[in-house]
Image (cartoon, rainbow, N blue to C red):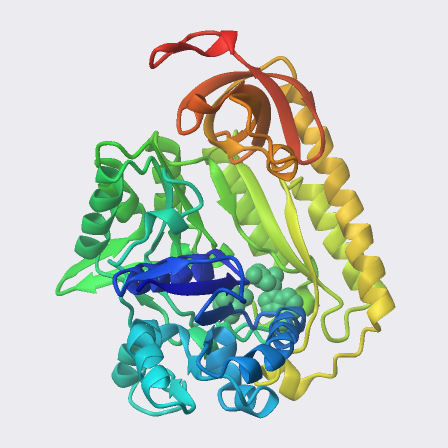
Amino acid sequence: MTKKLYIETVGCQMNLLDSEMVVAALRRQGYELTDSTDDADTILFNTCSVRQHAEDKIYSALGRLRATKQAHPDKVIGVLGCMAQKDQKTIFDRAPYVDLVVGPGQLQQVPELIEQAREKPGQYVALSLDRKAGNLDAIRRSHEYFDPLRDPTMRPTPFQAYLRIQIGCDKFCTYCIVPMTRGPEQGRPPEQLIAEARVLADQGCKEITLLGQTVNSYRHVDGGRTTRLSDLLAQLHEIDGIERLKFVTNYPKDMTDDLLQAVRDLKKVSHYLHVPAQSGSDDVLKRMKRGYTVADYDEMMARIRETIPEASVSSDFIVGFCGETEEEFALTVEMVERHRFKNSFIFKYSERPGTTAAKLRPDDVPEEVKKRRNNDLLAVQNRISEEDNRPFLGRKVEVLVEGPSKLSLKQDDQSEVLQLTGRTMCDRIVVFEGNRRLIGQTLPIAIVDYTPFTLHGSVVTRHVHGITAGAV
Ligand code: 5AD
Ligand code: SF4
């Protein structure tokens, strides 16, 4: 009999990839996916701890399952990922009917733990070692991973995949929980990564996004040989079938010239760099312990603009960090104006118990002030994004077609010809009318309109695999 799995994922791309791995492992055990918790006999939440809001969402979802579990005690409920690692047994305090709590480094144990919980009800916990647990090698090993398992149906699309090149983070920014939940930074061996990328290419994958918390700090030392991200990109570039390579997220201090030159020279590498600045104030950066100054960031941006003039750069900002004054916030606005990011992800500071900031500094910026600064910064960024899209009018861009657009999905459009979406080499979203059969193709699209977030275009007529693209 097939077993039914419901899985909900919150958080970053790392989590999406983790869920892909868990689903792959469970499919091998005969599981099928369902999108209803009523039908499921196993319910998993892959969780995020970066902000309180993400945790609240999971506790509400768990709360809604209380009655379900009472009525069907045989349903197995599991909490996986960062929240499991961080909150550990407190999850059982708030939701005692949870059967499994499994950290991001222990996901390979999920199938076995589900079986155990089904045979012998109880509370099963599998976590990585705490960062203070002593022996670094043992801590590292406890965060190691089972990446080669893959489930193509869980990918963003059949021709796009994530590849984890790095585990953990050693930067210890004072606001951030990730070094605690994902453990020490480790670069995976390049041979493993190349082999995994080859498998992906053989499965028809055209675009690979390399993942790491600070992906450009990637380093693997084997005897006397050191592999950096630029070296890895050059090796991945050789793989037939791969058309595009992206990498996220970057750490400003490690944006070295060899990497920028690799992005410039390797034609499959996307000219898109996501390099979170977090703040435009030196004092705030110091309190965040980001390890660079505004001048360092500006210098890095100058090198990016000089080496790859057409690159699009995006950033993350935290507003309302401990003690942030109006003057300090104004410096962040100035930074966004100065660098004209393609887009910025803006977050209100959320205190995370266990971090240095939570221990040392009061979360003293009122919520309304955080909200206002968030809105103000977003308004500036949106204006810039819109202005930056204007020059694309009338230009032709190469788009990898990802699938139906959000609008088509919302309207559940089943037609052959519908609104599609895709991305340019510099990660700009393009929507256009086209035939479903174009999905997965890389096509020239002429841009006819724009908004801050999207370019609108139409297919430039040419013959693509037996259909005339322009005549759709
Ligand atoms: N509060 C708000 N935002 C945070 N981020 C990380 N930790 C926190 C926090 N405690 C943001 C940073 C990071 C992004 C992934 O999430 O901007 O780059
Ligand atoms: Fe968190 Fe800083 Fe590491 Fe990014 S670099 S994951 S913000 S500690």
